[in-house]
Image (cartoon, rainbow, N blue to C red; front, side, top):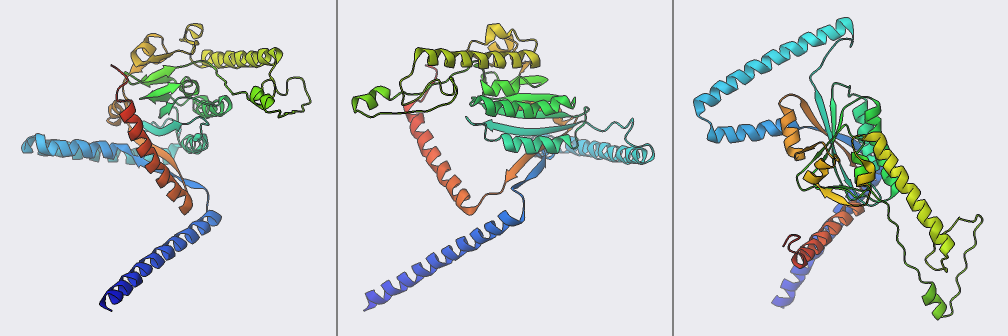
Length: 356
């Protein structure tokens, strides 16, 4: 009897926890549905990176710098801050009296990130961020894009590059920083910039076009399976996965690839005239220093150091578009992240080194 009593008590507690957890999920899901109907798909978040860098610097100084020296520096910093506030106040009065003409504000650097997949899925977020930046930025400011992409679909990356072109069209300096990779469509985006900054071993280039698809025609024929495709227009379909491909179709497909490659090269020429496009448009890739020699980039430096060098002379803001996600999407992302971690760890054990 005592065992049954303990078991029943345990079961009741467990059931209570499960019911409570289910209720919480239901409430959160309902709230998410209401938000979906009542508000937009996301919002812009802005962080001032100067404060982050200053906090790091102050933390280090508090340990390694003499206390008296530190007090003197803090006193000087307060004096400089007071002078800056006074100047800002005077500028505000000038703006009120004379309007914006002739008013020079402290340089602002707007930083955003683009992590590209094969479909350049972050283009919509990039569009929102650039629209927000352009509503405020002037030619006195600078936009920095930390770009990472191995490339992907031509039309998707063409649109992403066009979003960056909006910044150039407003005569606002644009810098693209590449810490790991900007290849193919990724380099198409990067070449729009006034300045490309590359980490020493970042991978750049891959200025080429590729298409590949399997063909199951012989397998279907072997098993007496017919495949029919009806088109209007001689070149509506050139190569197929299931039909019998012809030499004429292959020739047309290659011609289309060559034309796309020509457009890619012309795009680089129009945006980065210093590059000998014919020499680099071979589909090859270059590491940072080699890319510098080929004039694919302008300097060798990590994005972190580039921003640290700016923050003492400019206000640095990180701009991000944050999408609102349903509870199911959040749970799905968490599960996907866990799976990615396991897979990457397993792959890491298989390929422990790239240099040997």
